[in-house]
Image (cartoon, rainbow, N blue to C red; front, top):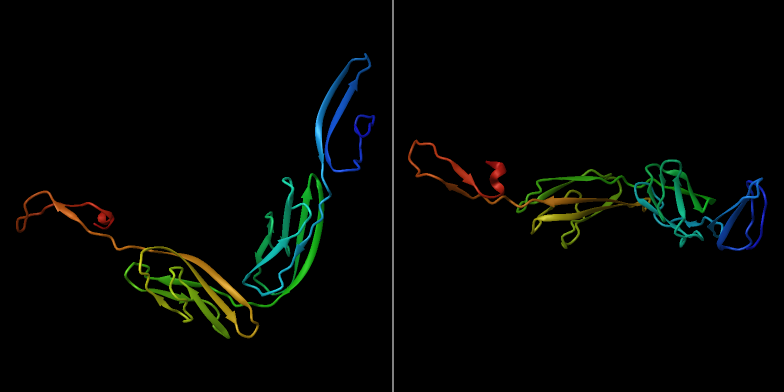
Length: 238
Protein backbone atom coordinates (compact mmCIF):
# COMPACT_ATOMS: atom_id res chain seq x y z
CA UNK A 1 0.00 0.00 0.00
CA UNK A 2 0.92 3.65 -0.17
CA UNK A 3 0.36 4.42 3.51
CA UNK A 4 -1.47 3.61 6.70
CA UNK A 5 -3.60 5.42 9.26
CA UNK A 6 -5.18 4.51 12.57
CA UNK A 7 -8.52 5.51 14.02
CA UNK A 8 -12.24 4.95 13.64
CA UNK A 9 -12.57 7.54 10.84
CA UNK A 10 -9.48 8.74 8.99
CA UNK A 11 -8.47 11.03 6.13
CA UNK A 12 -5.76 10.21 3.63
CA UNK A 13 -4.31 12.20 0.74
CA UNK A 14 -3.27 10.25 -2.36
CA UNK A 15 -0.38 11.67 -4.37
CA UNK A 16 -1.44 10.24 -7.73
CA UNK A 17 -4.57 9.21 -9.61
CA UNK A 18 -5.48 5.56 -10.06
CA UNK A 19 -7.34 2.68 -8.44
CA UNK A 20 -6.22 1.73 -4.95
CA UNK A 21 -7.11 -1.16 -2.65
CA UNK A 22 -8.15 0.03 0.81
CA UNK A 23 -8.12 -2.42 3.74
CA UNK A 24 -9.65 -1.97 7.18
CA UNK A 25 -8.22 -4.21 9.91
CA UNK A 26 -10.31 -4.30 13.09
CA UNK A 27 -9.04 -5.67 16.42
CA UNK A 28 -11.32 -5.77 19.49
CA UNK A 29 -10.32 -5.86 23.15
CA UNK A 30 -10.27 -9.66 23.14
CA UNK A 31 -7.73 -9.77 20.35
CA UNK A 32 -10.20 -10.93 17.69
CA UNK A 33 -9.60 -9.49 14.25
CA UNK A 34 -11.53 -8.96 11.07
CA UNK A 35 -10.47 -7.57 7.71
CA UNK A 36 -12.52 -5.71 5.09
CA UNK A 37 -11.15 -4.57 1.72
CA UNK A 38 -12.53 -2.44 -1.09
CA UNK A 39 -11.18 -0.41 -4.00
CA UNK A 40 -11.25 3.33 -4.46
CA UNK A 41 -10.67 5.30 -7.66
CA UNK A 42 -8.79 8.57 -7.39
CA UNK A 43 -9.38 10.88 -10.38
CA UNK A 44 -8.02 14.26 -11.41
CA UNK A 45 -9.91 17.15 -9.86
CA UNK A 46 -12.38 18.48 -12.45
CA UNK A 47 -11.77 21.87 -14.04
CA UNK A 48 -14.90 23.42 -15.54
CA UNK A 49 -14.41 25.10 -18.92
CA UNK A 50 -16.71 26.07 -21.81
CA UNK A 51 -16.79 28.31 -24.87
CA UNK A 52 -19.40 31.01 -25.33
CA UNK A 53 -21.07 31.43 -28.74
CA UNK A 54 -19.65 34.34 -30.73
CA UNK A 55 -22.31 34.75 -33.44
CA UNK A 56 -26.00 35.60 -33.35
CA UNK A 57 -26.04 36.63 -29.68
CA UNK A 58 -29.76 37.27 -29.73
CA UNK A 59 -32.95 36.29 -27.97
CA UNK A 60 -35.43 33.84 -29.50
CA UNK A 61 -32.69 31.68 -30.99
CA UNK A 62 -30.87 28.68 -29.52
CA UNK A 63 -27.40 29.44 -28.17
CA UNK A 64 -24.91 26.57 -27.92
CA UNK A 65 -22.16 26.26 -25.31
CA UNK A 66 -19.23 23.92 -25.97
CA UNK A 67 -17.97 22.03 -22.91
CA UNK A 68 -14.16 21.92 -22.68
CA UNK A 69 -13.84 20.61 -19.11
CA UNK A 70 -10.93 18.26 -18.38
CA UNK A 71 -13.27 15.47 -17.21
CA UNK A 72 -15.24 15.00 -20.45
CA UNK A 73 -14.04 11.43 -20.93
CA UNK A 74 -14.74 10.30 -17.37
CA UNK A 75 -17.76 7.99 -17.06
CA UNK A 76 -18.69 9.36 -13.64
CA UNK A 77 -18.58 13.02 -14.69
CA UNK A 78 -21.64 15.18 -14.01
CA UNK A 79 -22.18 18.56 -15.65
CA UNK A 80 -24.75 21.06 -14.45
CA UNK A 81 -25.63 24.09 -16.58
CA UNK A 82 -27.36 27.13 -15.09
CA UNK A 83 -28.70 29.69 -17.56
CA UNK A 84 -29.03 32.93 -15.62
CA UNK A 85 -31.11 31.11 -12.96
CA UNK A 86 -33.82 30.60 -15.60
CA UNK A 87 -33.18 26.92 -16.35
CA UNK A 88 -30.96 24.05 -15.18
CA UNK A 89 -29.74 21.20 -17.39
CA UNK A 90 -27.38 18.23 -16.99
CA UNK A 91 -26.25 17.59 -20.58
CA UNK A 92 -22.67 17.42 -21.85
CA UNK A 93 -22.85 20.52 -24.06
CA UNK A 94 -25.23 23.31 -23.17
CA UNK A 95 -27.97 24.86 -25.31
CA UNK A 96 -30.63 27.39 -24.34
CA UNK A 97 -32.95 29.99 -25.88
CA UNK A 98 -33.36 33.21 -23.93
CA UNK A 99 -36.59 35.18 -24.18
CA UNK A 100 -35.23 38.53 -22.99
CA UNK A 101 -32.22 40.64 -23.89
CA UNK A 102 -29.45 42.05 -21.68
CA UNK A 103 -26.62 40.62 -19.60
CA UNK A 104 -26.92 36.87 -18.96
CA UNK A 105 -24.85 34.70 -16.61
CA UNK A 106 -23.94 31.18 -17.71
CA UNK A 107 -22.70 28.76 -15.05
CA UNK A 108 -21.14 25.33 -15.56
CA UNK A 109 -20.48 22.99 -12.62
CA UNK A 110 -18.21 20.02 -13.37
CA UNK A 111 -18.39 17.24 -10.80
CA UNK A 112 -16.38 14.01 -10.58
CA UNK A 113 -16.26 11.49 -7.69
CA UNK A 114 -17.49 14.09 -5.22
CA UNK A 115 -15.13 16.86 -6.35
CA UNK A 116 -16.52 19.85 -8.23
CA UNK A 117 -15.42 23.02 -9.97
CA UNK A 118 -17.53 25.98 -11.12
CA UNK A 119 -17.06 28.43 -14.00
CA UNK A 120 -19.26 31.50 -14.53
CA UNK A 121 -19.21 33.55 -17.75
CA UNK A 122 -21.42 36.37 -19.03
CA UNK A 123 -22.87 37.31 -22.41
CA UNK A 124 -24.95 40.26 -23.57
CA UNK A 125 -27.91 39.52 -25.83
CA UNK A 126 -29.76 41.65 -28.37
CA UNK A 127 -33.48 41.35 -29.02
CA UNK A 128 -34.06 38.87 -31.85
CA UNK A 129 -37.28 38.55 -33.87
CA UNK A 130 -40.06 36.45 -32.39
CA UNK A 131 -40.85 33.57 -34.73
CA UNK A 132 -44.05 31.53 -34.88
CA UNK A 133 -46.40 30.02 -37.45
CA UNK A 134 -49.38 27.74 -37.89
CA UNK A 135 -51.28 26.27 -40.87
CA UNK A 136 -54.67 25.20 -42.14
CA UNK A 137 -55.91 22.52 -44.56
CA UNK A 138 -53.25 19.81 -44.36
CA UNK A 139 -55.06 17.34 -46.64
CA UNK A 140 -53.17 15.70 -49.49
CA UNK A 141 -54.08 17.15 -52.86
CA UNK A 142 -54.94 20.58 -51.45
CA UNK A 143 -52.55 23.48 -50.89
CA UNK A 144 -51.62 24.09 -47.26
CA UNK A 145 -51.99 27.68 -46.11
CA UNK A 146 -49.21 28.74 -43.73
CA UNK A 147 -50.02 31.53 -41.29
CA UNK A 148 -46.99 33.61 -40.29
CA UNK A 149 -47.29 34.86 -36.70
CA UNK A 150 -43.77 36.34 -36.52
CA UNK A 151 -42.64 39.92 -36.22
CA UNK A 152 -42.91 41.73 -39.55
CA UNK A 153 -40.87 44.91 -38.96
CA UNK A 154 -37.46 44.88 -40.71
CA UNK A 155 -37.58 41.12 -41.23
CA UNK A 156 -36.87 38.68 -44.04
CA UNK A 157 -38.45 35.21 -44.08
CA UNK A 158 -37.25 31.86 -45.43
CA UNK A 159 -39.57 28.83 -45.34
CA UNK A 160 -38.41 25.25 -45.80
CA UNK A 161 -41.18 22.67 -46.25
CA UNK A 162 -39.08 19.53 -45.73
CA UNK A 163 -40.16 17.82 -48.97
CA UNK A 164 -37.20 18.71 -51.18
CA UNK A 165 -38.93 21.69 -52.77
CA UNK A 166 -37.35 25.13 -53.11
CA UNK A 167 -37.52 27.46 -50.08
CA UNK A 168 -40.03 30.30 -50.09
CA UNK A 169 -39.47 33.90 -49.02
CA UNK A 170 -43.17 34.76 -49.00
CA UNK A 171 -44.59 36.14 -45.75
CA UNK A 172 -47.47 33.64 -45.58
CA UNK A 173 -47.06 31.07 -48.36
CA UNK A 174 -49.26 28.28 -49.62
CA UNK A 175 -47.62 24.97 -50.49
CA UNK A 176 -48.79 21.84 -52.26
CA UNK A 177 -47.19 18.61 -50.99
CA UNK A 178 -46.96 16.04 -53.79
CA UNK A 179 -47.19 13.10 -51.36
CA UNK A 180 -48.87 12.48 -48.02
CA UNK A 181 -46.68 11.95 -44.98
CA UNK A 182 -44.89 13.79 -42.18
CA UNK A 183 -42.63 16.71 -43.11
CA UNK A 184 -40.24 18.80 -41.02
CA UNK A 185 -40.93 22.51 -41.40
CA UNK A 186 -38.66 25.43 -40.60
CA UNK A 187 -39.07 29.20 -40.71
CA UNK A 188 -36.02 31.44 -40.53
CA UNK A 189 -36.56 35.09 -39.66
CA UNK A 190 -33.73 37.61 -40.10
CA UNK A 191 -33.86 41.07 -38.53
CA UNK A 192 -32.26 43.30 -41.15
CA UNK A 193 -31.30 45.93 -38.54
CA UNK A 194 -29.83 43.87 -35.67
CA UNK A 195 -28.84 40.97 -38.00
CA UNK A 196 -30.32 38.58 -35.44
CA UNK A 197 -31.58 35.27 -36.84
CA UNK A 198 -34.41 33.26 -35.26
CA UNK A 199 -35.75 29.83 -36.20
CA UNK A 200 -39.02 28.02 -35.64
CA UNK A 201 -39.28 24.26 -36.27
CA UNK A 202 -42.38 22.08 -36.45
CA UNK A 203 -43.65 18.97 -38.21
CA UNK A 204 -46.77 18.69 -40.36
CA UNK A 205 -48.74 15.55 -41.16
CA UNK A 206 -50.26 15.71 -44.63
CA UNK A 207 -53.22 13.35 -44.53
CA UNK A 208 -54.19 11.25 -47.53
CA UNK A 209 -57.83 11.34 -48.65
CA UNK A 210 -59.77 8.26 -47.38
CA UNK A 211 -60.69 5.73 -50.06
CA UNK A 212 -64.40 4.90 -49.93
CA UNK A 213 -65.56 1.35 -50.63
CA UNK A 214 -68.77 -0.40 -49.64
CA UNK A 215 -70.89 -3.48 -50.33
CA UNK A 216 -74.64 -4.25 -50.22
CA UNK A 217 -75.92 -7.42 -48.55
CA UNK A 218 -79.37 -7.45 -50.25
CA UNK A 219 -81.05 -6.49 -53.52
CA UNK A 220 -81.73 -2.75 -53.79
CA UNK A 221 -85.45 -1.95 -54.05
CA UNK A 222 -86.94 1.51 -54.37
CA UNK A 223 -88.20 2.97 -51.08
CA UNK A 224 -86.82 -0.04 -49.14
CA UNK A 225 -84.02 0.49 -46.58
CA UNK A 226 -80.81 -1.48 -47.06
CA UNK A 227 -77.50 -1.78 -45.14
CA UNK A 228 -74.18 -0.55 -46.55
CA UNK A 229 -70.97 -2.14 -45.27
CA UNK A 230 -67.70 -0.19 -45.49
CA UNK A 231 -64.40 -2.03 -45.84
CA UNK A 232 -61.60 0.48 -45.33
CA UNK A 233 -60.52 3.70 -43.60
CA UNK A 234 -63.82 5.34 -44.46
CA UNK A 235 -65.47 3.30 -41.65
CA UNK A 236 -64.94 6.20 -39.28
CA UNK A 237 -66.74 8.57 -41.61
CA UNK A 238 -70.01 6.62 -42.20
